Length: 143
Image (cartoon, rainbow, N blue to C red; front, top):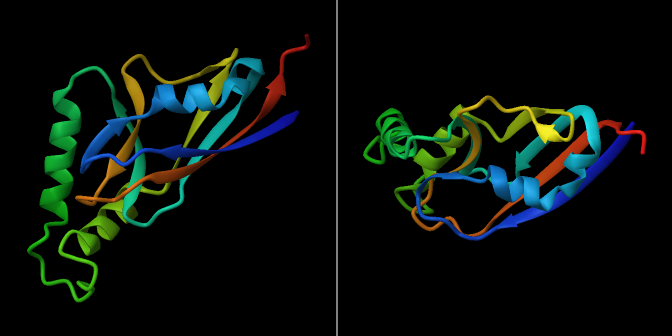
């Protein structure tokens, strides 16, 4: 069994849902060496989140953004407002979606479904760069 870990720095993104599957795979080339295992990705922030959802239709991330905005609107009477009107709704959205995803690794590839991808969910208007910790654990190929 082997362990690999990498901190991944993502450039600042506008508010919304952004596919990052390819970036994670590029930053964790060890995935190709794992026959069976798990990749855990954790975002080190409280106003952004990670999720897995459809990666084919460009309407999906737009609809996801609209839905989370309806669930946690900026015009709700929040008490925590010192960091701006988008901050507390961002915390709510991050709590609802979660700070991490775990994906099986099978035969050197992420075992995502045909239409699945990993999304960075940026909940702030100007969240800045984001950091992930990607941890891979598994049985490597006998080479």
